[in-house]
Image 1 (cartoon, rainbow, N blue to C red):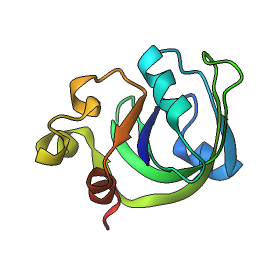
Image 2: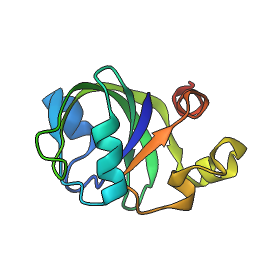
Image 3: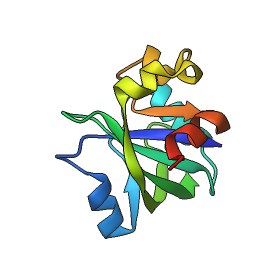
Length: 126
């Protein structure tokens, strides 16, 4: 399973995640995004995407644990991976046919987006 998590770098950046090594991913309110969080399993691979001025995929992470005692506040703990060798901008993502039907492109405000294995590979290739 593969997902993209959006974050506002002024609030919590990939650099912050890298520094902390492990964090609880919270602050998600959208019902569709919450459903994606609840569906995550330990070991799922993640892309961290920074919004704001840059709008680009910048690093990787993985799911450590998922606890769903409250469906409106799933507790998803993630672990930092590596920075991408080169950030992948939203413009580059939109230009790639693999993302034509992706919620990343179609539902721009969605903060948790499922990815296919192929999409993950494109974003992480050196």
